Length: 319
Image: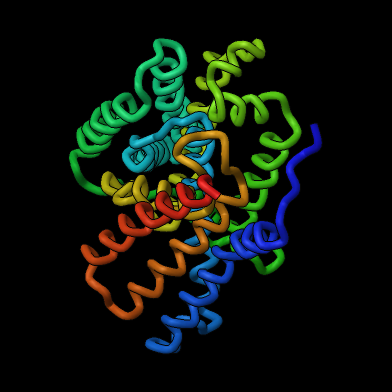
């Protein structure tokens, strides 16, 4: 049976859809520049690049579990817990290495707990990570007493916030390495392909002999480890362990992933989705900050972006 032909109109629509987000980023940047010219200044564009680096890591972390029809609603609070515990270890030991190891250990523990509950027991990822979010939030507030942890070693703050190898901020180098590894994993390994298959059709994944328990557990572990790396970078930038550092990062990371093209129904998304979505959300947030838009209105905009992206992706599936 011959494959169905694709009409020229359908091909054009697909090509335009591929450029929809890059064009949207350019239009948003231009619109804000007309209101506030500082938006396109060299200093602000560099600031956007650095801010985008953090969000891109968190968006990629969400993408890894969204691919499997999952969520990680504990992401933002994991950032806070990694921040305060790594800072406390650094202050106690004077060692930046010990603090980084502690932060990565926290990410590993949270991801392993989420993965075992979702992949092993089969609990709903939305409910599971929401419960984990409350646990992690309470731990972050308890261990820090609700106050910032100051006195971080200069080696930590200088190395992960101020360094600029070859003139590029260290954050951009870290993101480039993480995204290169993520692209290779998703495109060139059996594990990466398994994530897409599980998200597209869980029953088919089982029938194909994929170890869904191990794959889902590993997805949540890798997601939380990426979150921990982003949290360490943010902690270095703020110069202290902050119990509220996670803030709205969960919503922003989901928004970036969904805007970038990750489907909440699973099976679609990846490195490109995380990066483009993070750029869009960062440009939008930066512009709203520069024109001094109220923070609550900014959150309304982020929520609206998620809803609109879901509607658009639903329409794409119907075509």
